[in-house]
Structure formats: structure tokens, C-alpha cells
Length: 472
Image 1 (cartoon, rainbow, N blue to C red):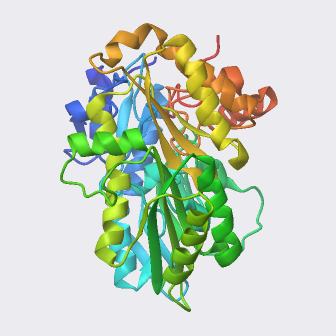
Image 2 (cartoon, rainbow, N blue to C red):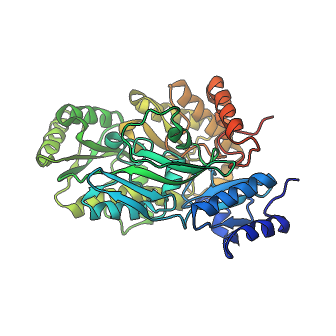
Image 3 (cartoon, rainbow, N blue to C red):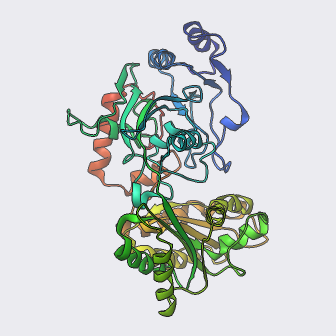
């Protein structure tokens, strides 16, 4: 018989297998994603202290056909951490935290899935190393969730996504078996790549409990510039020029919409802005190196671009504090967005040369549906990843657009796919985009994914409804 955490019998059965205090009622913050656009149905959360306890929970859920959703730092934006239908059990990884092993000479750290990203940054810093993945939610995002969504962040240009930064993964599979493969090997060619199968699977194939991650030498020199540009395409021209000069030393290239800067100034006045007036478009670029300070090179490239009209006003950071201010401004944009309240948010990617066209054509397409929309299109332009966010007109709220929200997203996704892009770049599919994935993704790829899901999780208990939409 199928039970759920709403049934006292299941919770009593599970509690008998675990130490007291492991099963708790959900807190209000467990019930929705950060923007409160999606609400879940979970009524209980398990907080295991050990991998053995995770195995016991998974086995009990498999025995009673209870849906189980891994829960990390509650930073996901596509509903992957929420349940619908029959109430599932949340499994919080927060107690599975800490560094199990640090090997500075080899440049690796084996960490629990509940480790907060910022804590890993601090551990690496103590060893004069860096873990290069960073994002605005680093103070709450946990390693397990970052792996489950294959998070990207602002340094993908040089270091890649979580998939590129991971050597091995430990996970509890849907039958409760432990896949103890959090190895430190740079080379391992033993059969199927199960590590990359679990990374990006959003908890639908198992519960990631630990991983061995790559650490890197801390660059001796970092140069950053905040530059006003006349159009989005100028950011790509500037990036190409920098790459010709310094190669893969370009660490970040972030496109910033003037609307985002104006909302930061309005709602977060404590955040410093490098330019007196917010340009319609700007770019934050960063170059890092070891042998010499790249500041002069960055200045020379910016000056040459300015002479040719690719750059208007601009500031090159003269101190670590000024550089930190640049990134604080970039990190503040999502918070300012939340203060306005988006009609719809999109995390998409297209080939680099299509970025300017997506911005222009997307806005035109959206305005055929809602002429008064406002836009804040920003993101990691160097890897083609844009956060294409739509906002209500001044004086209106997102509730006024509720009936057309799905139409807006579908129209934008159609355009992205027509350009050879993807409807999810770094946030995952979750439940929010499962229907669109079923509509737009390659049918053969979808069929292969379902085959893998059915083979590893025959009872469908692992994060049911995430990524793969329910069969009709």
C-alpha cells in the first residue's frame, strides 16, 4: 500500500529505524521556493546525521512507495525541491556537512553534500587554494544541490560547471545501496560514467551524500573592469579581444542590463555603483593570472575598444575593495528583481553569436503578448547563459499577468530552441520546466532518460515529477 508522510503509520515506522529527532514537521520555508511562485505539499522532513541513516530512509521510502525529495540550501528556482500530489518526504542534507578530507598538494577536497559553498571557499582559502565556483547564494547553497543542478556561476569561462569540478560522487541509490565512488582520481575509465549521470539529475536517480571536488591555485593577480557598452554585442567583441590577448585567463564576463542597475539603486541604495549614471548596457569582466598583473592589459584592451566605440565610460578596479564592490553590485541584481516581483524568469543559453539576437527578438516577441512588460536581461554572456526576466509595468503586479505567464515562457523557449539553445542553462528543470522539456527536448533523448530513470528507480520514489513530466 502506498503511504505518505501524512500517514502517522509511516512516520512511526520510519522513526523506529532512526535516532529520535530525525523526523520533523516541515518549516514554512520548506514549503515554497525562494520567490514563492511554487508551493509544495511535503509535511515532514528527515534530517539524517550519517550516510547510514540516509540509506535507512531511502529503503523505508522504497518499501512503502513514498516519494522522497533531497533538500539542500533552499536556493533552487525551478521547484526541484518541492513536491506535488501525494505528500512526499523531504530529506535535508544539512547535517551531512563538513570536509572529510583535504589534499592540498593534489588539489582536492572530499566534502559532505550538506556543506555550504561559502564554507568550502573558506576551507580552500586556508590552504591558499580556491574552489572557483561562486554565485550570489554562496552563503546558503549546499554542495549536494549544486551538484544536483550542475550549477554554473560566474567563473564557468575558465573553470567550468560543477560537472567539470567534480572527480567523484558518493550517493545512495533508490534501493538504499551506497555507491561509494567519491574517489580522488584524475583518471578513471572503469565502465559507465555514473558520476555525471547523477550530477544534474536533480535527485531523481539517488541522493548525493558527498563528493570529491577539484581545488585550484589561488591566482596571484586579478584585474576587473566595469565598462559601459552601447549594445549587448559589444560585450562579445570585447571578450574576443581579451581572449586574443590573454587566452583562458578571462575568468568572468557578465552582461548587465541598465534596468537592473536602476532597480538596485532604488531598492538597495547601500550597494555602491561604479558609474554615476546607469548605462543601458554594461559588462563586468575579470582576468586572473600568476606571472604578472593583467591590469595593464585589461586597461589597454578597454582603451582600444573605447576608441572604436565599443566601450563608453568605464572603471578598472584599483583595489580589492573596488573589485569586491563590482561583484557585490552584480550579486545584488537578483535581490532587486525580487523586490519588483517578476512576471516570469528564464535561465536559458544560446550559442554566443545568438545572444544579441535573443535579447532583441525575445523582447519583440514578448511585447506582442504584453506590450507594457519591462525587462532585465543579464547573466554570463561569456558562456551564452542569460537570465531573461520579465517584469510588470510600473504600477502593476505580476498577478496582473498570471493568465499569460505560460504563453510568455513558451514563446521565449520556442525562440531559444530555434537558435540552437537550451531552456535551462544552470538552474535545472525541476517541476517548473518539466512540461516545456517534454514539449521541446529531443524525443530520443527523453526516451533514453526515462529508460535510465525506470531502471534505477522502478518505483518512482526519487523526486517524482522533477525533470521528467508525468506520463499522460
